[in-house]
Amino acid sequence: MDPKIDVRTESSSMPSSIRTKEGDQWNSKPVSYKMYSKSAQIRLVSSHPEVYEPCDDSFALVDALLADRTNLLEHHPSLCMEVGCGSGYVITSLAIMLGQEVAGVHYIATDINPHAVQVTSETLKAHGVHAEVISTDIASGLERRLSGIVDVMVVNPPYVPTPEDEVGRDGITSAWAGGENGRRVIDRILPIADKLLSDRGWLYMVMLAANNPSQICLAMREKGYASRIIVQRSTEEESLHVVKFWRDSDIQVGAREPTTTSRTTSTTVMESLFSQFPRLAFWRNDNNSY
Image 1 (cartoon, rainbow, N blue to C red):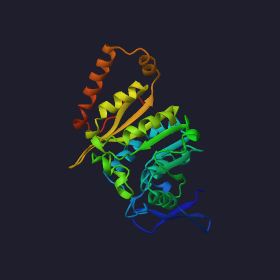
Image 2 (tube, rainbow, N blue to C red; image 1 turned 135 degrees about the vertical axis):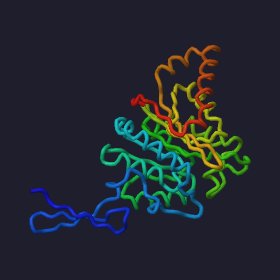
Image 3 (tube, helix red, strand yellow; image 1 turned 90 degrees about the vertical axis):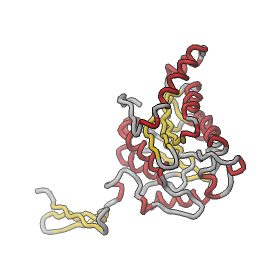
Image 4 (cartoon, rainbow, N blue to C red; image 1 turned 30 degrees about the vertical axis):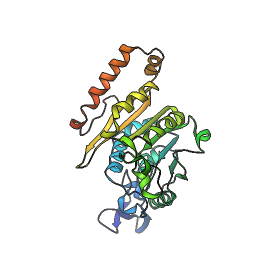
């Protein structure tokens, strides 16, 4: 006879324990939050005055990962990394959504802000997941250790166009100040990502329309990466895009023999794709291989 189950809650949103009855005896067992959600819970995210809190861009990135979750599970990454972890909302969500379905994954999160390192550690602990959290500028000091072995990298970079002298400031300003066209930090991250990503590595990056995403995708294409839009979201103040990059052997072969015609064609294709951003509230390739 199957045991009877009684779910008890401390609030209407999350069960705190499950009681099972076998025969005449009830047994109570605490329930992990991970059993009931595939992303971090805002009320469990730690905070600090000098740390960027989860906002529209954070939610868009997590939504993109959730939209691609089936592919991520099939991808079975061994090492996942977040650059610029802030509050820890994204890396925690990634660890939760992969969960026990992908065993043996190692998670690393970096941030130049030491307060963010502490807050991320607290957020991870509150959700019962673990990551190695390191205070560093992008991946400084980790290049040799992580070279060519990162299977999934997620980045919500400082993308807001600001005066150049605001880039790299201490505290929370470092979370959004992107310099001219918001590209100062993005353009530093991309070549590092190229070095750290494995042959099957995937990069998910948040971009603003002002960052010229088509130009970024063309630059990555020259390095042998294909790309596609996972999520596009417009707010009153900005138009956000989450783009996924992955190595494509066909592009790598083509990159060895560049011609004016092929470059013009690829530019036209990419500009056509990105001109559709305002009309794409959500787009996903039907081909689940990537």
